[in-house]
Image 1 (tube, rainbow, N blue to C red):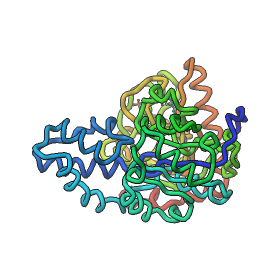
Image 2 (cartoon, rainbow, N blue to C red):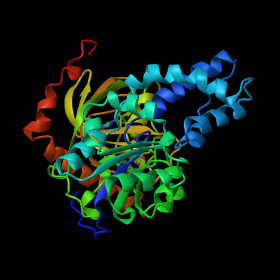
Image 3 (cartoon, rainbow, N blue to C red):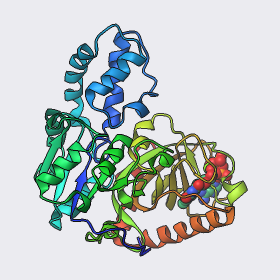
Length: 382
Ligand code: ADP
Ligand code: RBF
Ligand code: MG
C-alpha cells in the first residue's frame, strides 16, 4: 500500500497467536460442536462463537456445557470433543495472508514466536498440517505450558524470555480480546485482527486494529516492508465463487450509480467466513455473454451498516439491461484494500471508482491476465 504513515514503534520480534489469527479454526470448531450438541438433542446456534474466541479448551467446554445445560461434566465434554477435534485439524485452512506473513518474517530473520492458548499437543497437531510453519518459529509456547492462559500476560512474557528479547520490543498479533489484553499486560505492542465481525470498537486497548493479515504494514513497526504489492494490488492465491445473480439491496445502481451483481450467500457461508472483508478484483463470466474484468467488495458495507456479509461484484462493462437469474462465475485474483467507512456518499463513490481504475489496469498485467483463461470460467454447465 502506498500511504507512508508514521512509524509507530520499532520492535525486534513478533509473537503470533494461532487460532483465528493464522488459521481458520472457527470453521471446524462449529462443525464439531454442532455434531456433539445434536447428540444431546440441542442445536448449535453459533451465538457462543463470540464467547469462546481466545479461550482455552477447558474454558470453552465450561461455557458450552453451561449455556446448553448439558447433562455432563466439563471434563466429560472435553473427553468427548477432543478426538473429534483431532480428526478435523487436518482440515483447518491457513487464513489469507498467514503464509505470506510467516514467510516474510522468517526470510528476513525476524525472531518469531507462536503463543497459543491451545494445549501443546493441539498446537503441534494443527501446525503439522501447515507447510513450513514449525521451522519458522524459534519459540512455540502453548496454554498448558504456563501458569495461566491469556488474558494473563504469562504466555507472552515466557515467549519473550525464550526469544531473549525485552517484552517492550515485541509485537503481538492477535484476533481475540483475551489475547489483546494479555499482550498489553505483558507491556507489548499489539496489532488486533478481530476474527469476529463488527467488533472493532471493543479492541480499544490494541495499538492498531486491522481487518486482515493482508493489511499488516510491518514497516510501521520498524520491520522490513512487504515487497509483493504491484500497482496498488496484492496478488492472492486465486479462489472461485459462482451461482445465479440474485436481488441485492436495490441501491447499487440507484444510490451509487454502481450496479453490483449479487450472488446468493446461501451455501457460501464457509467461503465467506474464510475470506476477510475487503475490496478484491478478478474475472467474471456471465453464462450467455462472456468474460469481463470485475472489481468487488466483500463485507458489511460499513457505510450502510449491513447486518449480512455480502459479495458485491461490479462487472466492468456496459450491459444493455439486467441479468438476474443468470449464472455468474468469479475468479478472484487479487486484493486492493480493506472495507472502509466514509463521511459522504460522494467519497464512497469516488473511492469505488479509484478501485475500478486500479483493477482495470492490473488485470492487463500478465500475472492477472492469465486467469481470464481459468478453467472455472469455462465450466461445462455454462
Ligand atoms: P441489486 O441491489 O439487486 O444487486 P443493483 O442496483 O446493485 O441491484 O444492480 C445490480 C444488477 O444490475 C445486477 O444484478 C445486474 O442484473 C445488473 N447489471 C447491469 N450492469 C451491471 C454491471 N456492469 N455489473 C453488475 N451488475 C450489472
Ligand atoms: N461499501 C462500503 O461501505 N465501504 C467500502 O469501502 C466499499 N467499497 C466498495 C468497493 C467496490 C469495488 C464495490 C463494488 C463496492 C463497495 N462498497 C463499499 C459496497 C457498496 O456499499 C455496495 O455495493 C452497495 O451498498 C450496494 O449494495
Ligand atoms: Mg447489487
